[in-house]
Every structure is written in structure tokens, then in C-alpha cells.
Amino acid sequence: MDSVLNIAAYRFVALSDLPRWQAELHLAAQTLALKGTVLLAEEGINLFLAGPQVAVRQWWAGLCDHAPFEGLRAKESWSSEVPFKRLRVKIKREIIRMNQAAVVPAAGRAPAVDARTLARWLQQGHDDGGRPVVTLDTRNRFEVAEGSFEGALDWGLEKFSEFPAALAVHADDLRDKTVVSFCTGGIRCEKAAIVMREAGLAHTYQLEGGILQYFEDTDGAPGWQGRCVVFDERGSLDADLRAPVRTAAAQG
Image (cartoon, rainbow, N blue to C red; front, side, top):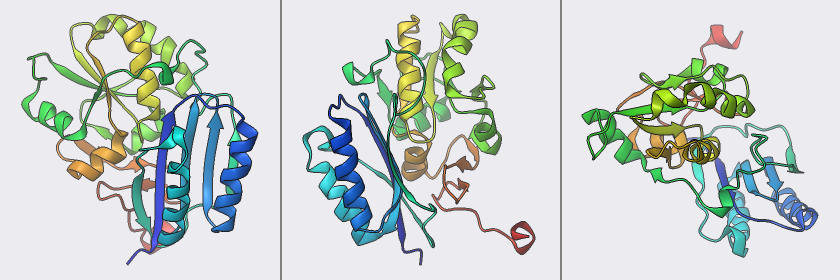
């Protein structure tokens, strides 16, 4: 049985005194021998950590004891080994780079749709108001190649900061549809949904918790095809939130 607990989480929340947060969170994770990455910015936190279950849960409880992170939920998965080589706690300008200073998710989120509701919409072919539903993949091209929702819009992004320009080209094609933006864990599609709302696309939603939450709540059905890229040594996950078994030939 896989014994390593992997957690991923983010929250857009106004943070100040970032060096203090950096030092405190790094010391706590280092003391518990956790590995992974924690990104901090004035707009919030984005993290991926792994280690023994008890240690991970202890670090997580300590994080959530702080007011900015109360009630924060983590997406969990399991592996046989820690999929990170080291621990990094870094201060960044943005926890997910878009280069749109006017986009401030902490000031108000775009509406979200949960995984089970999206699954129902995909099955019935429209939302609850009868509008056609399209899914919009906000991830990079190489991630889309590993797997996506069947029929999802893919604008061929090489990096997320290209999203606003791509939206300007395609916005008119989306105005009569309900658009659900999605990404790995929710952070990119949350920013994307805000930008689409600001562009006048009134029927825009983000997929709550992203693909990983969709896997957890629906096992990827209906609509998902392939795997989901994750940014650690596992490479990608199947809909059961486990890395695909590598054959001897694949291992070289």
C-alpha cells in the first residue's frame, strides 16, 4: 500500500510580511522532513508537499491554524515514494503568473461549478438553464496532450500568461455558451474565469478544485480522457489519483 501522502492546495488571500511566512512555513516543513514546493505572494499561497501521513497532517494543521488559511482544503493523493527531491519555500510576484495586475482573485472569485454538477451538465449536454456547455482547458499545450475533457477547447497555450491574448481572439465565439474553465488544481482556471467575466462573458464558471477534484469526486466520468499532468516526479495521474504503472520497457 502506498504510504506517502501528497497534498496540493492554494488560496488567493491578501498576505503581508512574506519573509516571516516563508521562514515559519519552511522551518515547520523542514522539521517534519517534508519535501515539495510552497509559493508565497501578496495574492496568496500555492503548495505541493509530500511525506509520511502523520508529518504532512501535522504541518497542514499548523498552516490552517493561521487566520488566512482557516478552512483551506487540500487535494490528497498517495504514492510509494516522495515525488520531490527537495523542499522549497519561495516568495514570488504571483502564485500563478498571468501578468495581469488588475486581476485580484482575493477581492472576489468568479462563480464556480462543482465536479458533480459539471459531470451532470456534460451528461445532459447543457446547463440547468438549457445553455450549451463548453469546457475550456487553461493549461499548457503539453499538459493537454496527456489528457483533457472530451471536446474541450484548447487554445494551444505555451504558458498561462498567454491566456488573456488568446481570450481576446476567441471571446466572441463563447458569448452564447456556458463556459467552464478548468486546470489541474483550480488556480489557473480561477484567474481565467475572472478575466473572462471582465471580458463580458457572463456565463463563465471555474471548475471547483480543478481536474484533481473532478477525479476525486467522479473518478473522471463522464467526459475525461487520458491522464492529468502533475508537476512532480510522478509525471501524471490516472483518474484514480495514482501514477500509471510503468512497464520495464518504459523504465528503460
